[in-house]
Figure 1: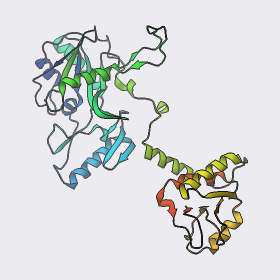
Figure 2 (figure 1 turned 180 degrees about the vertical axis):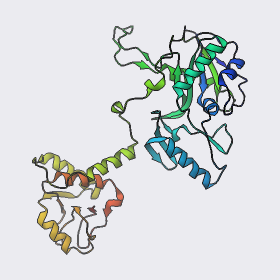
Figure 3 (figure 1 turned 90 degrees about the vertical axis):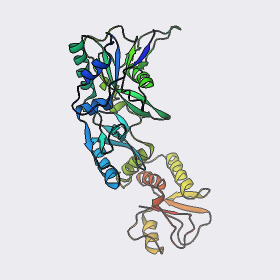
Length: 362
């Protein structure tokens, strides 16, 4: 296979209502059947009117942008400072829902196309009907990637070719049957087109020639097949968000002993984990807690009013290096304490007359 990546100069500034078919057809009369047309989603969005007005600067601009982001977000995946990684209504997971403020007037923001697959189909049909050329069309945009620095273009929409090249069932040169390999070829072609288009060269369209011998007779399933089903998504939340969700779930479990007798070894390991967080190097023991907890809360000065003690320090009479962890047989209380131990705001100073390093309470 021999590939060529060709720029399409002369598109110019695209505004709302512009006819992309005419602009591209006039700029690339040399298009051939089987070419793959890679079109930056931004000019598709501009032509389709996917623009919103915002203040040029100042806090009002950020507030307006936040409102737009909320409207375009189905689910927040992760947030760090001002950065938001979200899932859009299309199913894409990307920073700021793909909202872009580059290559557009300062008083406007560009949103993703409403339906990138439909945009690709319309552009393909227009080129075929007006110019008699049968090409595949990829609508691309820039995304970051988990675990890797740098950005690359990926396909948001596609028409005229399959988004995935499925190698499952094929046999490699060593005789091994491939069982998992599915290549996102439209993403690879989108990235190839970006090598020509760039970000500052006003080259929003590129052509990849040589990959296809002919486009599909129909438009195909589109890029939607690239969106992983939620049931198969092993990374649906950021680390901090997943941890917070776990804490919340632990705190809402029933606060009473379970019907099954807990495995002493499991309970012991959990107590050790709590001990390492609260007082590294301290020996903890498990004791029954119903009566002693009530007495301790009533008699220890400084105990927060209304606090539910999950990990209690030594009674007023010190018992040397051994601190008492009062969970009884309630494994749920243990789970909640483990979750809370990871949250610094829930670690309280020890009440007066105790010898433990800290007290956990909810």
